[in-house]
Length: 389
Image 1 (cartoon, helix red, strand yellow):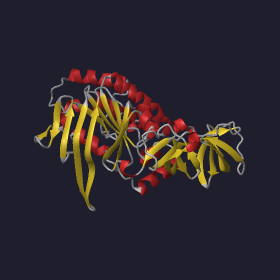
Image 2: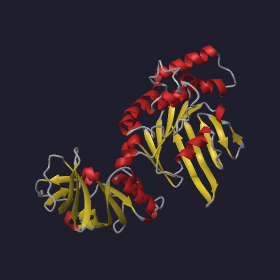
Image 3: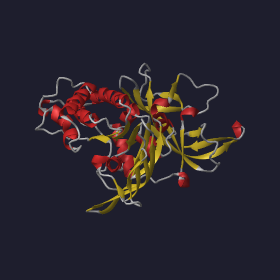
Image 4: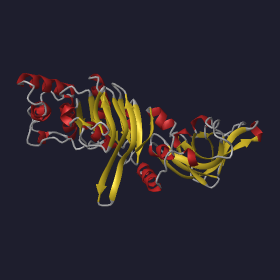
């Protein structure tokens, strides 16, 4: 079942005044798609899926589940949550501590369906859901005797027990340890895909979003600022915030100029020198841009090639061996550049090294009027601090 959102808006009244949680949000999620909403805390992603679920009432706009309109301000339409054929997994799991596994999973069928299910139908559905999430044999175990991972699977089974057309997942793995999260996210995607449901997944973890999603929508300040595949979000971010939020990246301010030494080809004049990129064709000379190049995409050279396009020499300021790579800081033209070097390299602090910034892997982000939204500096700063931790 597809999910369609048109011009959605939601405002909350707080002690500090009005807060616009969702701003003019338009989104089309395809039938059977695993779609993630990615962004920092407070960006509006949880409010969005709560509006889809019917747990929050928007101020304006429309929400469609397939061909059924479930909310419209203009048409005075509001379908209550229990009449929307969807399931939801909450961040806290919301497991009833006084119930066993069976009763927790059966709760939507017993209490949210107007008594339309028989005892046999409930037992069959719960048994099937338990097998689906690998909890067969745990049906009568008290919920207080479950591990965090088992509680997460109970919450998922409860979500799936009524065969929902749409599954809403609000940071369902956030309470698990890192290793279990990595294992569970793969299984989670497989489970949702196996029942043919459409999934809307909320997370602030870009690795998690990349691992489970067919497409990702990045949110900031209540706005949807880019939608694309994981590869598009990572390799072709449309905004500085997105480029910084989804990985370790170096930014350089520059100006697009014509390079007479390269038959008038456009390049970017930066603090470290001129950089060529495949993404400059549609940007007029004279425009200000921001160049982004990820730490893992910078190549350490044994020697400077004859064609030294995008090649530079700098001094190593720090080098830390991290197993999979060596994390380095190299000073080039007074600018510190983060580089992930191969673990077999012998990189000495204080030595000179040559590096290549491949033109095909350079991100060019236009500045000024071409940027869709202004990114608050405090959000960029928090994102950088989080990645360094």
